[in-house]
Each structure stands twice: as structure tokens, then as C-alpha cells.
Image 1 (cartoon, rainbow, N blue to C red):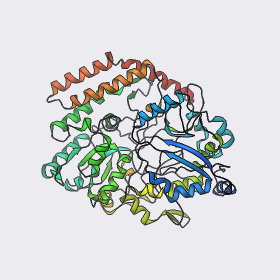
Image 2: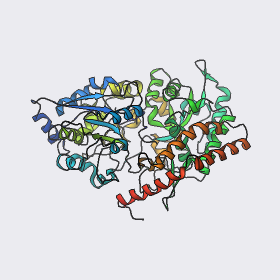
Image 3: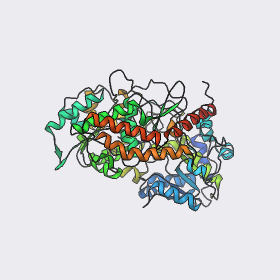
Image 4: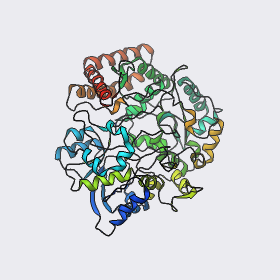
Length: 563
């Protein structure tokens, strides 16, 4: 996964765990218990709400969120008035650059990264957390140190903690195959890339188009950050690596090699070349943009892909809304060849983006109390489950999502924003199948409830593969990397390493598509060799490899990992 590139971590039902709607705790925050948290908010209800401005760098946030019942309830309980600003017109990177150049910031920035730290835009949170962050300290525990910036050992932003055991219900990076493809090819066992190729050849021999448009057998969009999502990362997963993005990390020495120079990556491109020569890969995939790809998926044209399942949740909802549930996707582990252990769902603690308070904040105490509330038990329940009696009920002492909420969430892409339920999964709060201190799950997205949330088409496919939820197909026993994910480790802005990485990224956008569309093996090999040579000698990717190797060693020391 590439930093900051998650569209929504959502999917079927509560495929995403809403994270927090933009609420806040401007007075008290609480100690993690529902009674004390709400008491602090209620005591200040008579006072004028504290105004906070916030900008989020996540592009899919819809304006209807701020009129949702969950949002309003949060504002009511916390006595905070948040002016939420979203991206419009310019893209996220352009907006970041303009904001940093101008030095004009809101009180709170959401979905930020180290560029704002380097620019001096954020205040350290350490003292504020110590005095006003009981829920933050409780949630993070010893893992709070993993948020520290390696340059000055201070904390500048809060992401979602990943330090509690989680049951894998909905996989992230995964092979996605339309239900109809599986049914018409006899529900094949899919273990290797060749199995996928053979299935697609069988299906497309008899099924050519949908609504007058040709099927896209293998989904790909390699414009911008889609290169990592649909080319680079699938290669990592197929060859049994965890998600270190551009880095291949030797797990004994922790030395880094640029992944796009490795034999594993070359062999994955050979698979894409096989798809291309077999008429299964759209030649325009390497220039397809994000919105265009989403439209392709939502129209039912894309038959299969290796992708982050959370990024297609709204597209699947659109398919169901259009009466095409058979065009939604099953989730499978997949490897390049027999003998490779799938490690795609082996998660590590690693943090590269989150929510921070800027140097322009007029009331940093109110801002940190707001962030602290998000990590309270009460905040988690309200933000993930919604409002009791409206979005969920208590049945035999457990939270149960109302059937009508499940139905709407699955079939209407706008529903989560209109209600404020399960909307903002990247905010600092628990999400996934994680249990809170009350013994119940932090969200509806859990192993107890997920099966009941599926539509009949999904249950039919699950039954064919002998499981009740997709996570049961995946192996999570692999060893976690002690440094987290390499893609969350920042490289110094303006350094030779950063320049080398930028040049390499530009080069692969130019050359990789041409390699994949080679007409024969000799041409493929010649173009591959030229690509690697340019990475080494023109991009100077060795500068990046050296800096990343050193940065991993720094993180290991910072995290107290002994080698």
C-alpha cells in the first residue's frame, strides 16, 4: 500500500468501520468509560460550542456527512462545532503544496504525512496527550512510542491504533473475482496466477460483453498512485511478501532493494504480459485514472483483479443497487506458484498518516480533547455503530446492527455519508473485528455479525468455498515485520534519496506498461534490462536503497527492537 492512498476501507456491510465522524470532546474527554465521557460533554452543554476548523485530505468525503444524525449527535454530546473542509478542484498533493507554501492552516489537519512535519506546520502532541489524553494513552499503551518522529522523538499525529488482536473478516489486498465468473467456470480452486489465467480464458470464451460494452478481464489502473495498488503491491503479495511497497527488505539483514528491480517483480510483469498476449489485459490500463476505473468496476465490466478490497466497497454497493449482485466480488488469497506462503494479510503496527494539530490552532486543548474522545469506548461505539435504537439495538447484551441499516449500507453508496455510520475509517479509533473493554466488538464488522449482513449471492459463493466470511480463506500466521511497513518510513524531503525515488517513480510510469505489452520474450527481456539499467544509472535508486536501509535501522532502535 502506498502512503495515504486508501480510498475507504470498506466493503460489504460494515466493510469499513467508520471512524469517527468529526466530533470532539472539548471539555474533559473522559477516561474511556461511557458514563464519565458523556458526563464531561453534558456538563458543558450550556456553554457556547468550541469552534474548530479541520481540513481532510481524503477525497471521497461527501458533504452530506455534516447533516447526518451521527454527526449531529456527536456535536451535541461533545459541544464542539467543527467546520469541515474537503478537497475540491485540486488534488490532494496539489492542495498540500499550496497549503504548505502559504503557511495557512486550519486548527486540525486530517490524513497528513511527514511533509507537514518537515514544514513546521504541526505542534508536538506529547504534553497535550500527557495532560488531556487519557483515552489516547489507554488505547496506545506502550505502542505510543511507535508514533514518535525519528528526528526529534516527538509525536505529531494520531492514526488508528493497530495494537490489539484483530480477527480478519474482510481482507485488504486480495484477488477479487466476480461471482458470475466463478459460477460459470464451476467454482474453481484458485491458488496460483495460472489458475486465474485459465479461469478468465474459460469465461471470456463464452462471455464477451455487458450492456453492449466489452468485459475487462483483468482490472488495472496504473495512473498516479494506482501503479502501487494494481501493479507493484499485487506483485509483492503474489510472491509472499508483506506490504513494503517500493521496498524489498531482507528479513535477516534489513537491507533494502528497490522492489521493481527484483526477479519477483519481473516475473509478475511476465504474468501481466501473458494476460496481455491472451487478450485479457486492457492496453489502456496503464493510463486509466482512478475515477474511470471505479466506473468500470461499478458497471460490471471488470471481471477480476488483485486490489485492495476496501477500495471497491462503493462500487459493489452501486452494482447491487443496479440489480447486478452477481457482479460483486469474492476475495481469495493468491500466489504466483505452489509453495509460496500467502502473507498478504499479515499486518504489522506501522503508521504514516493521521490527525494532527497545527501551529495555527486557536485552542489546542479543545483539539486534543476532541481527538481523545475519538479513542474512548463511547466514541468508538457511536462512531462505528451509530445511535442506539436508530442504527443498532442491544440484543442479549450485545450490539446488533439493524437489518435495514445493513441493507442500505450494502446497496446505497451514499448511505454511510447520509447517516454518518462507518464513514471515516482512517480517523484515530479502533476499527476492524477488535473487541473493546466491554467484551463486545468495536464495530459491526466482526465475525459474529458479518455472515448475516451478506446478500444471498455472497452467501451462495461462500458456501461453495466452505466458509462463512472471506477472512477464513486467508493465512495470518506469518511473522510480522519488526519495523512495521517500510512504506510508512519517511525519507528526508529534498534529499538525494527522495529525488532518486521520484525519478524512479516517473520512470516506471513511462516504461513498465511498455514492458508488459511486449510482443515476445526477447523484446520483454530487452526492455526489462533497459528499465533496470535506467533505474540504477539514471534514477540513482541506490541512493534511496541506502537511505531506506538506514531508516529501517533507525526505526528498529526507536522501537526498541533487538537484532
